[in-house]
Image (cartoon, rainbow, N blue to C red; front, side):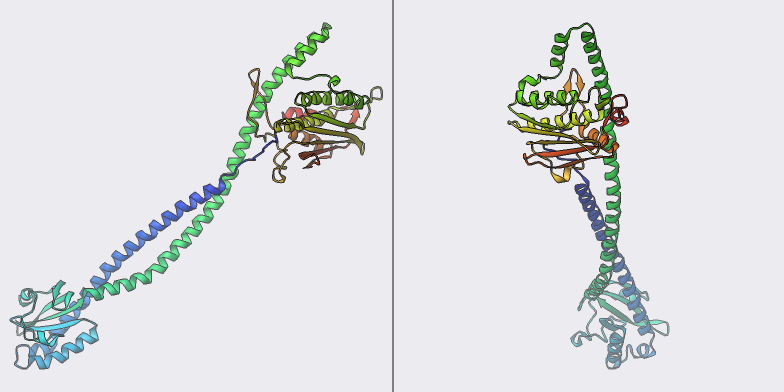
Length: 449
């Protein structure tokens, strides 16, 4: 298991959610703008229709008043009709009321100077007995107006014209739009909040599925690589068995050295003396680690407080050997990754009828936030390597140690070491086993590989 410069699995959830929310915000903003434009058009059409109908109703009602019908064409028509026109204009909320005679001469007008003059727009439609509703530019500006004929005894004797300024219509439209805006914005924000909430839920689920898929793919590739490596390892064991069977000890050792650069304890006399009474497996594991460290100027320190149990029926079992080997190899890898002379310190002692294995190193250490991830199977940031055409599996060792420890009701604990790197402590209760009854945990762990 590689633990130098471990970065962990990078979560893409944050950027993905931000992008998704940004897209949703853009969509909601476009929808809000579109809604406002549609509302503006609908309100504009509605107001113009309402205004046209209102001016037409006022004009027709005015033209049908007996006082108007009788006064139009009379000498004192202005004095009679102007007060009436002003009253209608104020009560109906229109901007002007103009009454003309049959020649199109104004009898009433909101501007006194315009009374008695010919109207500024064409009166022929109304004088022809028809009704006109539309926008024209008169003396008071652009207005939406209605013109209707004034009938007396079946003859058109004048016209009644009622109008509302376009500026008044625009002001009314603006007022209505501002009444609609808060509702549109509120609905948009509510929709955005709901969409963001759904996106967060879906994003979290998507992330979980992505991580699960990545883990599954990692396990699949790891299992495939381990199967290939197991097959190759079996072939090598057959070669070694053959060499040993024909008593070619030196050639067998040479073959082993071609597979991995391991020297004897002669490279470290002090270590050889320290491990004189240690179990054979412990001596072999630490000898290999010491040889690797010595090649780079490093040093392995050992404190082994268990003795060889040969002849007692007890053994330093497969589980204990697997745990020690993986922890020591992991520490050596960490020290070598530093590219400088480093130290690995190993302590093995009996505890509670089992073993306590502690391995310290002067490597880069492990950040607290990564200590749970690093003991998961398949977790590694090392660049993939191949040997004899086979990809070397990564992220196996520490996960295997954890499973072995848990199978013995123990644990694997990671902390900081006084050497500057990491400290691994594996407790394996009841791991000093009978030689003919190894724990099932080791075989289970090897099957997991």
